[in-house]
Length: 286
Image 1 (cartoon, rainbow, N blue to C red):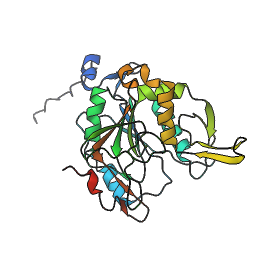
Image 2 (tube, rainbow, N blue to C red):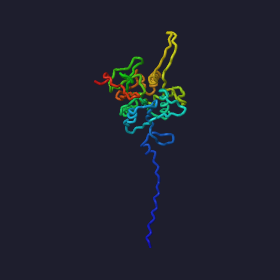
Image 3 (spheres, rainbow, N blue to C red):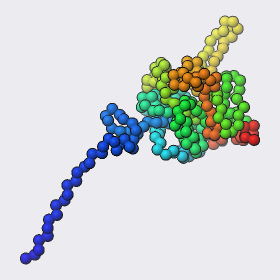
Image 4 (spheres, helix red, strand yellow):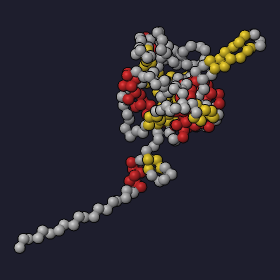
């Protein structure tokens, strides 16, 4: 007789339930369902016309990512009822609404013509870790030759020039080309802003491009006020006192916004020309 081979029964596999403590070791946010998820730490928003340069894409997506970092990129796709392109202010307001409703801690604007340095996220991460400065901008210049630094103290008095590359400069106006904002501040502005429709979507008017005309009876002339949405937002934050709640000492400063000139960005136009073409020697350290 042939020898019978013993029948080996497969072992039963028992799925082990991972304890909430072990999950908590890897993540640090609790949602309503009790499931642990990564912190919505920063949203990167880019108002854009849809056309970018390859240099921008290489710089934007070639960033050095700090360790144990959480980041989300938001891309606003176009649908049938949305205009082909948003205005700058509308795009900014859509991004702000996304950051508010999804509970992000920080919002970083990177406009589609601003080329960040490779270590921009690493430098911004230091400010995010401390949390004591709510508005931090990189340095960049106008798209002109000669180029002028977009570093402002006051309005209508040209740019501020008492600084050198590598300095940290306090100002009262910053552009949104490369701008990090604490969402604690942005939520205060958001909650105090009226609703309106942007391309059929209901958003809040956090950013607005000032454009007004009126007849001055005293001078007999038609007068006009035109500005940019970023400087208008900076002025509103100061005048409405939004900084007082979380940053009372900073609210007392005449110039409460910080430009870190170590985050030196290039401004690129559609044909690939980068500004400044020649870095102004007056801003080079001695």
